[in-house]
Length: 136
Image (cartoon, rainbow, N blue to C red):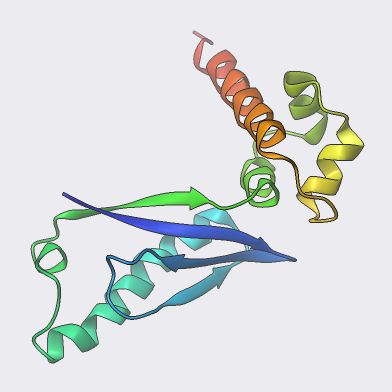
């Protein structure tokens, strides 16, 4: 199974994405929501591969439908915007111990967190997820 990495960034008012190097050529796409981006990723890949199919150069993994899309969130702003429909900055602040104003700066691209701070955000989001999964 080929893993197709979709590199996702927050671009001011929407998401922008591109495929990893195992997809030949270059393709970029945008969407206003992550759900829309996921649909756009598959549609863009299919459209992009049509030219390779016509030229007889399509990768075997695509022809065999032996691939999966995996999303790579490139920065803290993207990560926070991905989660915004499901949680608030206040709840992320409580889970991470990071000031809500600071999180807002990260989400809006005003500031960029250090790697350790980004990891605190990821860990806090995982903690929120575990609490939600524990609901019976």
